[in-house]
Every structure is written in structure tokens, then in C-alpha cells.
Image (cartoon, rainbow, N blue to C red; front, side, top):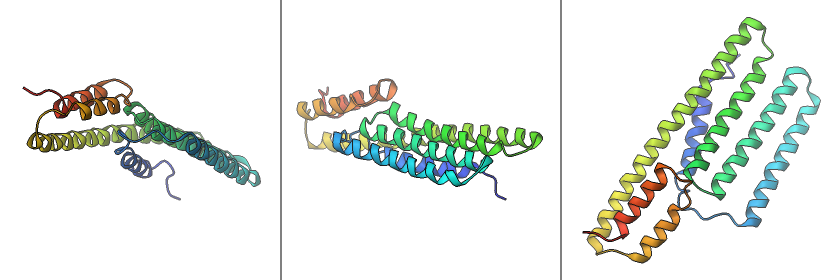
Length: 199
């Protein structure tokens, strides 16, 4: 029987989420109708998933219910990150995904006897810690790639001419989508370097 708390599926999910989030910094907020439709779809999938648990009993039923809840929580966090793109929302979605996988793993551990259960819980905790560290590393790489792209774009802008007040203001407004902190400051600095006044 394969281990249920293996880290690799979590890392794959983190990588997929990061690929989705990398282009969100300048994404438009979802239309309200589109947001509600996606939210309702998540609720519908959750109800359907929970209904499938009715024919189960004991730990399998508990695992089924935990998985349904985990999928719904993760999907809602991803939807929120798409609707209001910011560094804080992206990190929250990744954390919710890690926490949700951890919650399911703990329910699976409940089916084991005491000595094996303790080891199972320890493995689940380690997997969550590793997933968080992997997410942090991947996001740092994505940020570094974005900075490199900004520098290249700035070089092209420098070659094209002087400051561009309209694009500077547009870029500053896009930076407002970040929830404060270092990434928002970095975004503002890059906007100034690319489109603002230059010496």
C-alpha cells in the first residue's frame, strides 16, 4: 500500500498553482457574474463529493468527507486569488492547499494503531512543512524571474525614449493589487524605474 502522506503530490500542486499565479499580478478582477458562477460550481462539486461518502462507513467515510472539504477550501482560495490578485492572496492559496492536504492526511492516520499513527502524523507534519518551504522557494524564483523580465522591459523602454507618465500611473495602479509588503514596494519601484522620471 502506498503512503498517503507523500510530499511529491503536494509539490506538484504547489508548482501548478504557481504557474497559474505567475500571470495574476496584472490580471483583471473577475466579473461578479463569473465569480458567482465559479463559486456555485465549487459548492456543487462539494455537495456531489459529500454525497458519494454516504455509502461508506468508518475511516473511509471520514477520509471521503475530509477530501471533499479540502478540495472545496483549496478551490475557494484559488478563486479568491484569481479574483483579487495579490502576493498575500497567492501565498494564502498555497497555504490553504498545504493545510488541506495535511488535514486529509491526519484523518487517514486515524485508521492506524497508536505506534503507527504517531509515525503517520509525524510524516504528515513533515510533508506540510516541506510543502510550505517548497512553495516559498518556488515563489522566490518566480519573483526573481519577474524582476529579470522587468529589467529587460526597462532596457527596451530606455531604448525607445524618455519617461511615460500615462504608463507610469497605470503601472502604479496595477501595483495597488498587491496587499502591501515588500512585493508591493518592489512593484512601485519598478514602475518608477521603467516609466517615471529618469536622471
